[in-house]
Image 1 (cartoon, one colour):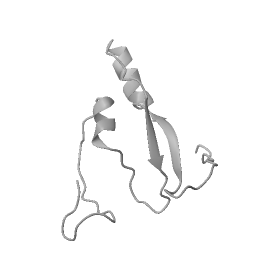
Image 2: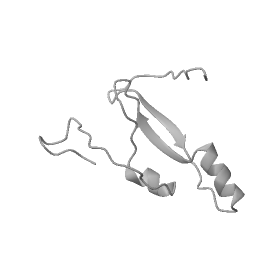
Image 3: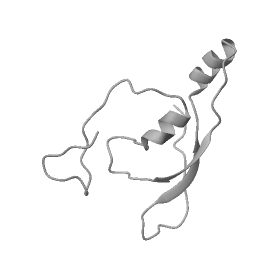
Image 4: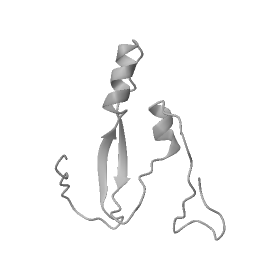
Length: 88
């Protein structure tokens, strides 16, 4: 297994916020290149690290810009989710 990455920095009033670049997987990149298709460029995102979360999520625009389609959806609740109204 790969070693666990180490992230250091200041915890802000918004939490453990980090800037990162997100792109398609190496496997997807290889398939696109093999078929002479364009590889979407990596995009900058500002992310909140939540060590207590069971999922990783991005805004739908991140997936759209990377030309990725959902293969499933799961309901989630956030502090701002109204009772009985999961967000997809």
